[in-house]
Length: 427
Ligand code: HAM
Image (cartoon, rainbow, N blue to C red; front, top):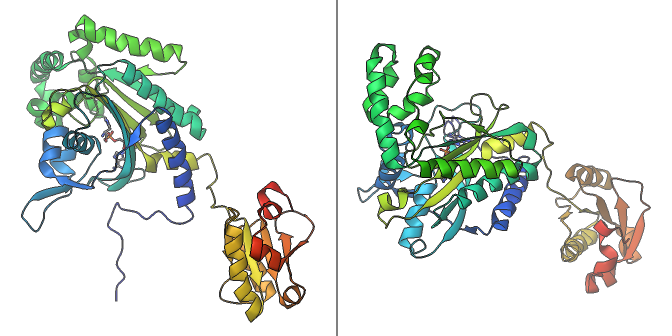
């Protein structure tokens, strides 16, 4: 029978990869919780309307990339393509937004039916943060500094750079949009087919086009910054000057608009040159209008999400895969020894060690091969002689430490923690 393969664009994360993922995740989560963000766990499936309303019906994500299906009740549901809309929905539904401030974070898989390539998957993983109730720009700055601290924590600071932009307020954008449509209409013959389609629906996205034929046209297009009122300019200025005093390098990219409709004021992306076309490892910004769109009273909000698949890829371009640590491998030959070995391993785990007990038999040679392969630092050795004389051997598998002995019965009875603390070399 033909074997069944994974769905295209959805990959397995294998045991040799998961320790690196966990390590990266825990460093990021530590940084997030250091800022006082609290975890929220969200469903993977939501009502399709939630995304239509929030991300924007004319965005690529909603128009082309959603995994949408009818469930058995005939309700239209979608696998979440991102976490922000879900987080707002959950926070609203559970009374976490109004008349209070809130810092939330989440982690998990997201789904987009994009064309798979390196760094772009149909199931991918994000860690995201969302803060509600602060008019800013202090929260925008806090999150920019938080995301910057990620790269420091991972040792990737010099490989990832920051681009920021401001999208102003809705009225400012509407005025700019009208001018933009007029400008592109005047030059319609120079627009690509895709750009022409976007002209009425989402003209801002034309600015995002990589089409070399349109670059001159895009460069001379009316810029949003020309339509910003003093308050919006000041907001953006505060962000830039604080980043400078914090020593965070950044570039203002007036063409940074992002692929979701809900942003206002600050938008930003962290980008690496190391992943080819899929270089954005983290992105976000302010989304003051979204809570209202989803059905609440207007609440200012700001957030970002980091693409774990991409961050792990950049990490592995510079560092070795992290291995799951093993402290002890218990080698035991003979029926009685094998049985005792299980008890010995169990007791040793109480000391906090990672202990693999040999199972499935084998002679000493075979078992030591397995012990070496496991990556264990030490082997506990239990054979007929050891049993007869009531001890077990402790062998240093990685260095030249002397072979030691420990009294078996006493250890099994009392589990002498101090003596067995291998990491502290108390042997
Ligand atoms: P986004 O820019 O669509 O923003 O996604 C955030 C990050 O997820 C990207 O920078 C990228 O690293 C990763 N990502 C996106 N699509 C894929 C893919 N197909 N394969 C692998 N990685 C991918 C959002 O999702 C917003 N919800 C961010 C946000 C939070 N804004 C405010 N709060």
